[in-house]
Length: 185
Image 1 (cartoon, rainbow, N blue to C red):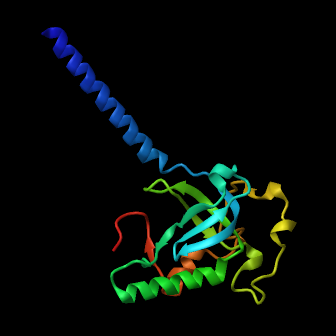
Image 2 (image 1 turned 180 degrees about the vertical axis):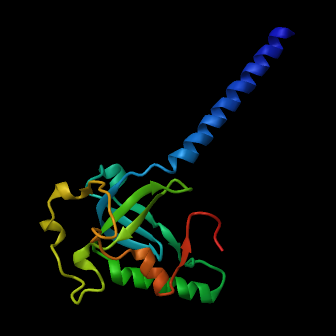
Image 3 (image 1 turned 45 degrees about the vertical axis):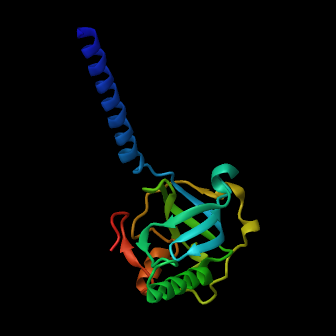
């Protein structure tokens, strides 16, 4: 009898420790950043999701990979409301016009709550929409392969020369709301 109780307690403790360990991995693993990388936009799925190729990553994790834009939430294309579906189409068109077929910078790549990749997506400085020629700059074939994985460097307001943040542009133009990964409004 004592042996059975001991085994049951041992199983309970083992189960609790496994659950606690998994919970800690999920909680702290979501905070781990995979750094920054250049990516080529293959397709715009909707206003806040892109499919990209990341040349610096192995094909199994870097080819035709879905990226969720960090910091914003756009309406869903399959929403019940016709008005929201129209807003979703407008957001997708805005992102498509801005990014389709272009090279972008993925900053602070992380795993989101549904285990998909989430990143701040930026246009390189040479392709900022605030410049007269938005298609200026080197073509993808002119960018050396070693520059596709960007080294993490501390940035400050004085030295940061990166281009436009797509989430900020979506919010600025009224296509998206700020979103931090919690419950949506």
